[in-house]
Amino acid sequence: MSIQTAKRLETVKEYYFSTKLREVRSLIASGKPILNMAIGSPDLDPPQKVLEEIKSALFEEGAHKYQSYQGIPEFRQAIVDFYDQKYGVSLDVEKEVLPLLGSKEGIMHISMAYLNEGDKVLIPNPGYPTYTSVSKLLRAEPIYYDLDEQRNWEPDFEALEKEDLENIKMMWVNYPHMPTGASGNLALFKRLVAFAKEHKILLVNDNPYSFVLNENPISILAVEGARDVALELNSLSKTFNMAGWRVGMVTGCPDKIGAVLKVKSNMDSGMFLGIQKGAIAALRIEEVWYKRMNAIYEERRKLIWELATVLKCSFDREATGMFVWAKLPEGKDAEEYIDHLLYEHDIFIAPGSIFGDKGNGYIRFSLCIPEQQIKEAINRLQVAV
Ligand SMILES: Cc1ncc(COP(=O)(O)O)c(C=O)c1O
Image (cartoon, rainbow, N blue to C red; front, top):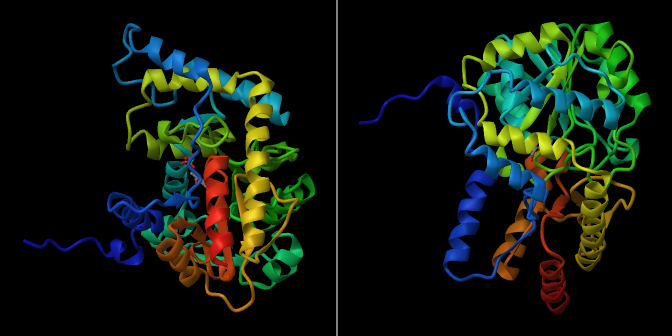
């Protein structure tokens, strides 16, 4: 018997990678030697200490009970210390941090806490597709602001000021930016905070890529007065190779964190203790961890640049983050080209168009793939091109 789904479901499609990876898995099952360089899921292990912590937590008294909705105090303190040491931002351990089951769920929780039907939401184009789908699921209206290579993928404030900003409730920003790798900077953050204040907009910086091939990690909360209008999402997925653990956080002023907690505490019942213990160890890891990871990503990135060059793509060597964002030769359609590479050469790369129409003509390579496999892709394509 078919039961009618909610109207909101008609506003979204299943997530691109959810469907495409199903196809890729079936190609692999049929024996195809697929090289997957599409998704930003770190292939390396988390720090050893993190694994030891989750293991020993399994046997702690009370480990398998529901945990606090706000995370255990030691975890919140580790977040506070991390923000202090890495970004120079001081946070109130009781009221200004909230652990999340990954930052992706935070996008939904923040949106549920602030958006009414019909509210407008400023979303970067290109940008992470979840900002759009969550807004649509809540019957809010995405309003895209274009990011261009010429402007180093930063918003055009003059163009923004000309928009009708009347019903804009919220603005998503994401620096370091995915998919382009633009790093962002304090001057940009100051301008964004001023813009949000002037127009009474909730500004949310989604910040999971601060520590991947990025010299100067910054938090939007470092801007004076940012807490009046801004929240920040952060994540352990990329920095500590813990994507599958589902650990993230939202930080900001007490009333906004309280609003998010009001939603979240009605939707889940705390995070598994072992995961929190592992997360504490990760956040307190020595500096050498970051250096070691970045050295690996740097070598991989050189090879990806080589691969992009074989494909006659152009790219920015100054870009940060876990991906290489590359422009296809003029006239090539990203999705067609991606399918050609997948079906003819068994190589899976993400088409830029899934991040918005401003991503047309671009492709995104992930650095979450061992050097040997990137070399294999270069070999396959050098023979073919
Ligand atoms: C821009 C951006 N935000 C959020 C996320 C979600 O990360 P998490 O694993 O913390 O949910 C991703 C993951 O790819 C991302 O690229």
